Length: 237
Ligand code: MN
Image (cartoon, rainbow, N blue to C red; front, top):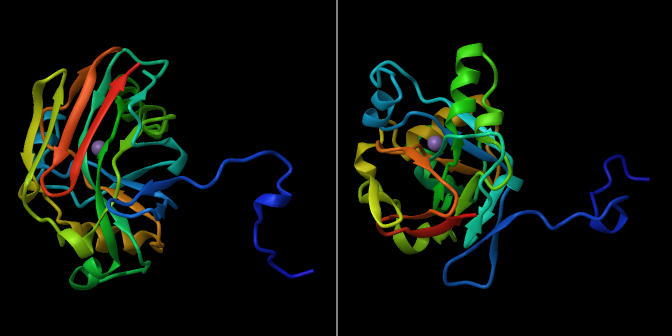
């Protein structure tokens, strides 16, 4: 018997779905997802609206399970246990290569492509967790908490460092920023996260949200995008 047998779906003791994967625009192939890193407070105006000083923080992250992605879903379920579900439109980086302690100057070599995501947040539960010094999972890591678009390869669009990032709720503009407002750039974020953990192919990084976050209710439609990357359009059931 090998010391580390390769996991195989055929000998699982329970039925289990295939690993989450994102469509790749312009291709039949898919991008498999390993982990989902999410950067907090990475646009100054959003940091201020959440009551923080944007000049004082190094980038930090929390995580969502890959299984919490809602991949090109037309709708997601409004989650239980919240009365204050917030939208956060974000540029998502999809890593095609791994690395640890990566220099920012080398970081873009790891990037396979980009997508558009929404970091859905139970703001009431997150606020309680912050106050009590508890983890953020109840506020951030629930099922379908991360609607996401297809991935667009960097080989086709390059590495966007400016361009509009926006989100409408039922046609009313809520968030309207620009990637040039990122406090920490994509290469800086990759470098920073890779100091704490070995990054791996298939990892995603949600890069933070611009100002204008707010509550949404059942029956509303979220429509947003990042210039040059794509759009996302999802209803809350
Ligand atoms: Mn976020």
